[in-house]
Image 1 (cartoon, rainbow, N blue to C red):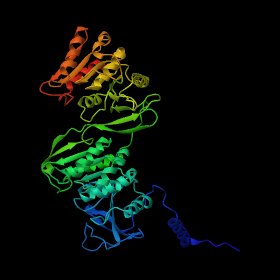
Image 2 (tube, helix red, strand yellow; image 1 turned 60 degrees about the horizontal axis):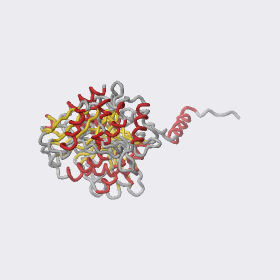
Image 3 (cartoon, rainbow, N blue to C red; image 1 turned 135 degrees about the vertical axis):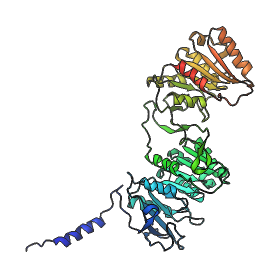
Image 4 (spheres, helix red, strand yellow; image 1 turned 60 degrees about the vertical axis):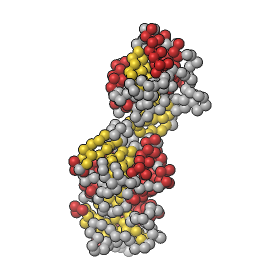
Length: 507
């Protein structure tokens, strides 16, 4: 029997059937097919409706009169919206509006211009994040190929809802912009997962907003302590409204950069298992934003340099070693070997990082009352074997300064200089009486710089005795006195003289 050709129509039918039966390749983009209308600036809007019981999603014709907005759905349903850019950016990034669709949409409009999709699912006081949000996420990422890490935009309750979903899925979020966000106790307890996944946060708040101290400042404090990146913009004199900025560029730029940012290469000195988080200044800057008709207080890594901070362990060494890495390493790989955690107001350390110094915190055993000499020696060997300078800067404040003096006394030929803030020369690391054993440091020409408050209780019995004895031994010591100040603040208001001293000696 002679076979029959399927003909043109038959071939088309076969191709069509194969197309609809073939699953979308992972990561492949599939255009949206919802009921189409126009959103701001002619962007294509697609509407869907979700059944809350079955989580089925189907196209939906938006009612007349909605224009760019959206009305609450009928009971048992959720309205869903996607707005598509005219040209999608690589990776198909998207933003997820946590609540209040089309309220102050200028950030989303700017993101659309830059190739983002914008998505929304019904949310109000009773329509909270739940399995519906998970189904919407799956629909957008698995069926249509949008990025697996959306950026969240949340205002007021929308901020709370954005965080609610994000803390439950911390590995599926690129960043969060929260505007005068609400919150709850559970959210605050779980926010550490976002820090572990290095999700950058931006808060834009009014300085007299009633939620500022209750939620935004609490989130900021917790996130900073966990090593997460959080930046804030506080609009002077503004209340809960208006949300956003008239010029959304700073917000949109934050989101775009957060999407594009990726973790850099791990330095070769980082050993075995490690954690990486962020170190940055929390100093305020008060900046004029003419388009907003107010000044805005800005702080955090979006407005200052942000450094990688690594924590790892070495075989045979008890306790973690912490290394803060500069953006650009200075010639010779100078570094600070310090006792005590570097706080975010450590002005000297921040200035040295900007000059290309590494800042290293020596390990302290969990089973002893202080650091052990042999462990610090092992850290020194490990880092110098990885090209770190053979002569670090020793740094400590208060009684922690005694530990760096102790290590220096035991290793005088391995020290470029010693910097102490209100130092107390007592140590667990060494059994020596440090003030009686300064001769080796003087003989090795190790310069010392102390910054002290004129009212610090240790000034007379420690720094003044150190100064007198070191000079008698022929050593070089400089004391900078902060008149009228006590033990705190530790660092000088202007760290330039200290930084110049250290940079010169480290060379």
